[in-house]
Image (cartoon, rainbow, N blue to C red):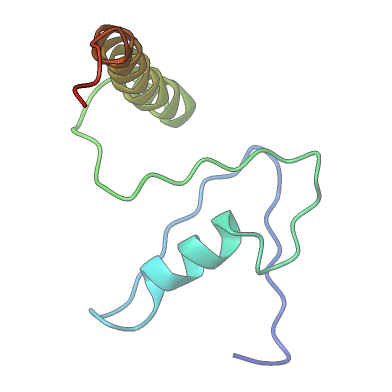
Length: 94
């Protein structure tokens, strides 16, 4: 794409419609990676999978997803820290 402008207004909802392979997901990835200029004061949360239907707002769904992902990472770090502490206490054999 060239000579194109993307303008989004606060408080509005937008949808991307197009056939498979037309670049909808690629556009979202470019926005998330800030390949397309986005003011720094705007937070971007890009989820790479669909969210199950719910009564949650879009932002609440994103926050819940991020919280679940951080919990998995946190549990992994706790496990890794525990494992490596145990492993580092083993004496090396000559």
